[in-house]
Length: 219
Length: 219
Image (cartoon, rainbow over the protein chains, first blue to last red):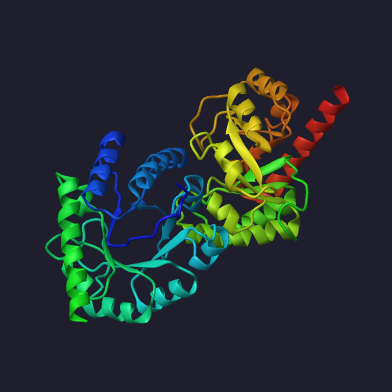
């Protein structure tokens, strides 16, 4: 199956982190999480050299295509192009979205991290396909300023593209950002550090799906 | 001037290193080196985030275009694409050359580091436009295995594409790799750490040009 041939489903977006897992354990944990209900996977590698990153990307791209979940690369557009990922996700410190839209294929999805209304609007105007907004809760993965419920709602009101909430999201709190208007949640440690990534993904997905139904029914 | 509109001249190839220079001092040092005789510049940034790397690349690309020297990016194909660099250079640990040739524009030059005949032949077959071979002398920049005169000559005999020698090259020793068949020398610290980068480039260029003349006259 070619990249971009299925719709991007933002409900449960797994952002990977290698931690100390071997390559095999890492891939197995991601595969189990996909079976558990992850709807999109973003490979984020901060340490790996280009070739190692690329080879891991090829392995994950294959898995994601087989499982029909969208596959994203964090930051490295070259790896995204080489591995024919469905999307590339960049932060405010990475290449600007306007420049990216010019150098990536038309069908490649573009995600941008945004923690303010201005950043989210700029991303949408630059042609982003989704924004990742946070941190909605305190997190061990990154130390960043928190984005309140009001802040998330304000971004929701300002942009039309899918909005993911990120930062410290777990089963116990995942319903709140969905109630605030997020189309899905992005998680790192809630899945990658879980003892059972299949079960962790399944529980998270149930909370997200329930919160989405609840929001729709109360509209 | 568009990228790739002038011929790649490999004689004195500057690979940058930021060290502790401010952005302004860094750019000034590179500009002075170009005026002194550098024929190609490769921006190598190991620490910078994508946006900082990109902005530095734009500044250097402009300078190189104005001065008609080719401008290369180390490793990050996305930055090379975004800044419309003339070339991208990768090591054996970066994305494979065969994959790169598929994702970069046809006119973009591709350089590959090679320290053996096999690596150099593979690079040439994959469509590389030049190989960077070394380390021909001991270096403080990278600790790597040395490539002997015989090793460099063997690579020269095995590939047709331009061959740059790299590693510990300075005025006092630059003639040897040229005599061994290199088309030019790539330097980092011999220019970037020089008190006067203009003078350092000028001296190196004189040695290289003299060694190239000498080699041609004794053929």
